[in-house]
Length: 548
Image 1: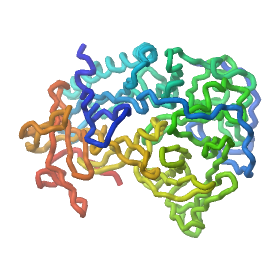
Image 2: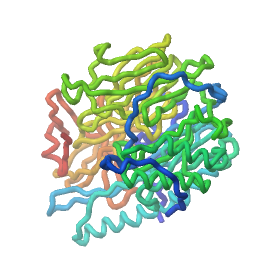
Image 3: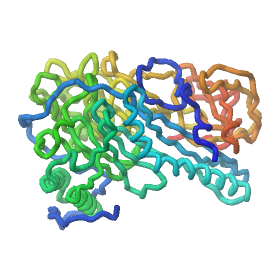
Image 4: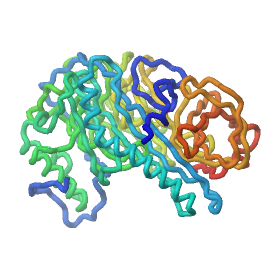
């Protein structure tokens, strides 16, 4: 069998949004039916079901309170281990159906966890051993199904586009704990997630009873956190399952600096899960607190399901409390909302501050400690499936608005302020989601993109005519020679530099090793006319599709 790495661009390849370690801004160079115990859960029989486990519980009103004392040790003694985001391996096949006039794509995008810092050989071996039993079959399936995909098309059978994933979002990756989940794989059932927690120094795996000290009280805490009167049967079944797992000592969970998380099925642009936070602070007696509180010198902390966060934000040894909410401004129209953020005794009101917010509500609350200050990020679900992130600086016991970021942060890898995933919508050979990595260090909390080129994993298009371009060295992105892509060739957008409008495509053939990387003479003018070699892209490619 051909090795999967043979189709990948290796360490120097720009398409792999690689794990961060000492990077500078440049072109990207590479890179169980489960037993449950009956529990009493309050429901209101008269309420109509309104929510499924993939949705977050209804936001509740709370009065300002003094945060409880914490027995956690807060210090910045940890270091990152050079795996803030996974490497990504991928491969694509594509065919053109002349009868339908459509291009169909079959592909796989697979995370690969490689620790970049020295001294963690035992941990790397543990990861490889545990993940190989899931990842290796995924790659085998890709080749087998890819061959079948091509054969079905050759035989005149109907095929369809399918982009598969092998995803491992990371929740911690420091010198004490590595925590991640497997959220997408062929061998996983719908809504099934596997979680992995390790002691970084030894590679020893941590399980529920290593982290949670009291199963019974933990199950009570879980119900207290997530029970609600208007829950439907599916939601109640989810609670029953998780409580049963807690009582049996086999809860699947990930770890952060201030909490553990349980994952449920849910969908957004950058993942297929929703992470429910179970805070440690206020319930320290239920947890092995040696695994919580300590951080690297820059780090991030997420809010809970009610957009609330309790943490020693300013490092003065006292707990601080942040809580955000949003309400519609009826007089301004349904897309305008007011954000209210309480930081201890200080309250920020976007309406009072004349800050216009166009949104459908809060999606996530995130705190990041950077080298130049403390920042709060309020991610809002915006019109047309966008996510707008409003940035605030926490200073002198108050909040100051900094800016708004249109490119949404990728919540699957948002643990390290010096390197986290971002994504944005762009138009090249059609509309697509493009990926980069960013840092906020020394940039007043605003994302500074680490790479000039953004990568793309969208569907392929097919050349209507011969198209001239320049072949590119996949390791250095240096030009090699002038080439012609023959009519009928399927290509996909591979890398795009929005500042220079440099567009690199990958030709997709039946032999993945024979694929080329070609820079096209792509232009986008002020009127949004998109051309290649001076000709409208719709005249050059089949299957061009734009959103909106």
